[in-house]
Length: 423
Ligand code: LLP
Image 1 (cartoon, rainbow, N blue to C red):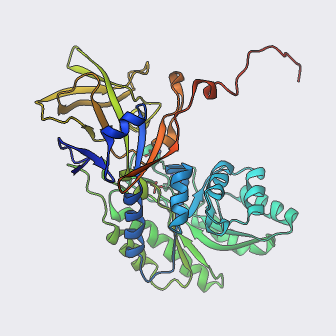
Image 2: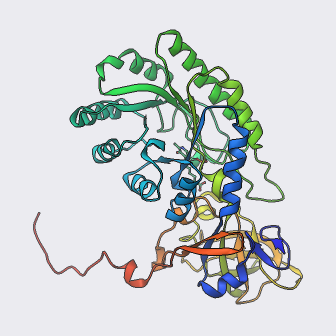
Image 3: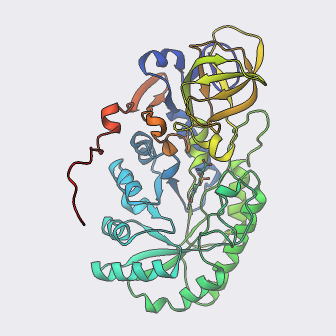
């Protein structure tokens, strides 16, 4: 049997599971993730980092499903979290707190208190206000918080502007000048052990040069700090490694080249190197399985109307992102051009424009590839469409890791306005 995603006609399998058989068990649309593919990515990254004291902290936002996080836990992978919710998911899935790092510009006092009490490994601090708050919360708990400064290296990652984070004008991190002053005043924060650096310049980066630049700036700063007597125990290089969304066009950075850039920049760093990959570990391991509802003739070309929509997979609508679409037909069919759309009432609910596909008919199954990262995690119930099921696949077997939401669950927290009160 051939692998789904290769754009071929024939048995469509992912992790040795026939997706057409799976679609008899679960209503479409649903997500399917290959555990084998995820394990393969973790192993490949580890191999590329062999010999380094490196820790992989999966960026939970990419795929926070408990089944996926539990797989990460089993593999010894930690978590990069950005909210109390992601902390609780990570711990619930079995990721030990000492493998958790906490990033984000808007950590609240409650979130910081929760994470500190849970005993997370490191806070990636992004502002002076947050540093003062961390000191106050840690003092209140009689604890010492371990912290890294997130520096903004002012590097253009060359990616979509909505997911670029390392330019000076972006909201993330602080300048090297500001970070320098924090280290100089470290004694003003007795409950914070400021002993790390962190940088994350963006996501879906397809060129090694921005990584090299950012790593170079971080390394230069670490050397300066070391010379001034500030010993660091960790450098967190963030995430951002891009993946292949377009089988025939995208040329991602090879993991060995990426690891090589880290090795070169941080060759003599005596502490631990932290990586926060999200997309690279899971994107290509996942697909969204969907069915054609109907073919609607259009002025320019036919619309292929799917039962998946922008509420299930937002990336095409939000970033005009390309995702390969593969019909799971049993027989060869002549090619035809389609605008591939969902049922949601917005023109932006478009997965692909003018896409050449084998001719489709109502009821046909298709998969949308590269859906394992920022797919389910960015889903919503827009148009009152329930959150779809998620299924983990592993060498011919499947396990449901989220069932489709029911209507009752969708409205469970709502009620009619009856009990009117004054604040
Ligand atoms: N670390 C930090 C601090 C981050 O902000 C992010 C992603 C990551 C790590 C993981 O980056 P990755 O390895 O996945 O590129 N929704 C967008 C992506 C947003 C990424 C936000 N931050 C998309 O669908 O393309």
